[in-house]
Amino acid sequence: MRHFGALVLIGALALFAAGCSSGTADKNVEETPKAVSAAVPDRDGPVEKRGESPAPTAPGKKDVLAARERALEGMSPEQIERLNEVVIAANLRLESGYLYDDIFGKLEDPDSLYWNYFDQTGEIQIGWAYDGSLDMEAVCRQEGFTEDEFYNKYGAKVSITNRYAAEDFISLMNELEASVQNEALKADLQYMAEEMELAKDHVMEHVNNVYKKLHDLDYFLLRYGPEVFESYQSDYDTSTVSRYYGTLSAYNTL
Image (tube, one colour):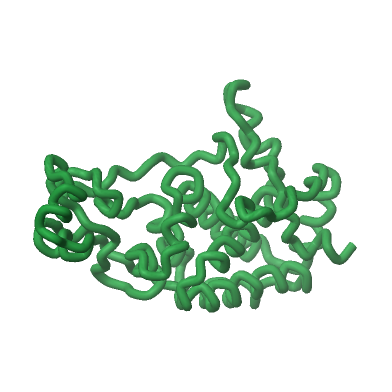
């Protein structure tokens, strides 16, 4: 049985930027990973920007506690611990990429090197680096280069070791589903496996759907989002953890 380290797939997406794909990084320098925190202002995802209806009203704490009790019924403490561990870690890591690294914007390009996280294991390329003193646009005009030709001449590959790809995430969701007795929660885990399978065709919306489901499972079933950061300083913005995307079968079937 694989440990929840399979979530490195998600963590890598969230914590590493594609170096020089924006044309601003210094030569051979990989962008520094940013700290994970859900207590930051929420932002509209790429799907919402296209006119998706506003998020539905979030369930209250009483509803969350009742839904959680139903969802976890029949599971052992070890199974519950693993479910929490996996979902929370996956949500926080993918959320970091959403909030800090425009992951969904990058994945809108089906040819983006970020898709290597889903396609390959081992040493993968996630971007390009080049000398920051070079003006890429000026060089391309002067030498008649395309962007790819510029990178091939002046760029250095930004690579990272990726231990798990999309297939591993799918296997993990299937493993969790087998430990769950509640049909609504089973459906949500199966949904994420199916969406990740569709994402393998380099369609960003399916990754976005996985993120929303993870977010709702974390903050409105396994935990209660509005209370996640209540012990922190009062100036923390809790809009992200308080947002509900309306994806959970536990509430849709009531």
